[in-house]
Image (cartoon, rainbow over all chains, first blue to last red; front, side, top):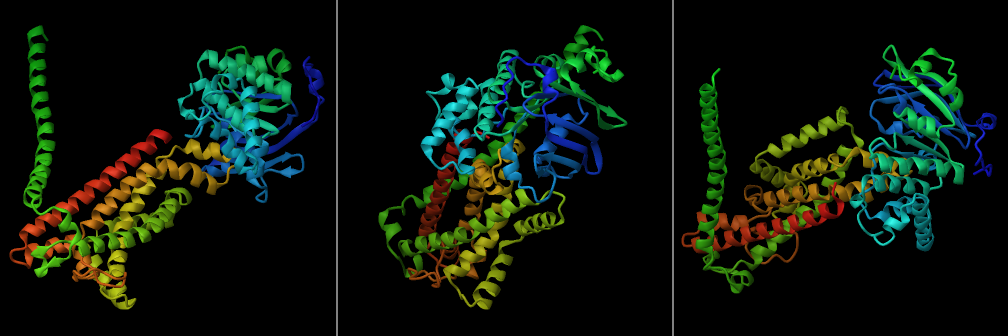
Length: 273
Length: 289
């Protein structure tokens, strides 16, 4: 993880940061029917990239390509190229287990495993070879503190995770992902299933993670105001002839204040979408 | 429409509702009373026979006198062989069907269709098959092994379907989030999916055991008739269901002991049922899928 810290966020400076992930001509098909087509963009390092757009424009489908979760969906095929450092993600030779450790995912609906709170975090850790139980416990404490859950659950780590509230569950899912120290976090509308207060907590958490650990975060959101609050970069997807397209990708300031595309202008001004 | 007309419709509706709910109460009542009648009859006839000596001594005078100890042992051995073979094969096949073959896959469809056909095959056919294949071709003769293996064939479709249903009921999100954490498919299966599917598996197990333990036709041709205490799995052994059949059909004066054996059979079934529902309740409490 690089050490560049930008507490005083200067978006123009960030624009110079080199891209972490390069996506070229990416398309995804469900049984030959395209969900989105020909998306080319570069995800800048240590930044929050928001993907916005109306429902059904392929935002979530785009996200699941990036760590090959699309492999799990029957009838789903992906074409194009995704480069992460020296790794060609879409290559059949790519090790998906290692890849998914580098690129963590947070889903829309919080989905902790039906195990204890602690085991939700230690189970993936064990899987990835953290054998020492004291070390695992330290990680549990660390990540639960990172997501602000430690004080709420430290006395009931053995309780079933399904007894937590919606917002707590989502933070546990984030903690579980953080425990694996990923480089990139993919978030698919992580707040949309939560009440406004939990949603605010998770949003603050996302900002804190970027600042404290320099995570690169790609977040799909329905909530334009949220994108405006947290994003460094914003991409607009839109349906064109029944298939999702990337309309505009720009630094957030430019995206919201002076977009190039007419569609973006209409969307950010609330005329469309 | 005026108010009184509306009222009349309401009253008619109400009357119809009453008739229909009466019908829906009556049907289960008939079913339950049938069950209670049979159970009552068996308890009435068998309770007098039931004592420790009945369970621990060998039958005398072709079963008219004495107990059922060797028959109990044979029954449990046959059941043991049946489960030892059918559980691993059944769970393995269910995993293959639920996790590795999508619904439209031709192989999965073929296996599912075959299982449905197998589940409907009359037990006498299984008995003849077991006799031809296990007893004759494989040379196992009339033995507990032949009987257990034949029962395993019969129970497999039930076991597989129930386990598969249990696995399919596990939310897809668990698989996705597990994969997103870089957890291998094997670990996901072992630590997440199988525990979550356990209640379904237990249901299948109870149904399977129920079918196996009540089986008569398939066993006559495979495990045989001999009511001696078996000394090995290659010995012939008489199951409880065959013992009941024999006592009530072929042995005059064997009715009392037939009742006693039937009561024991039913008690075993109820016990297995109770254990399974206890385990299933315990699992669903901790896992809550």
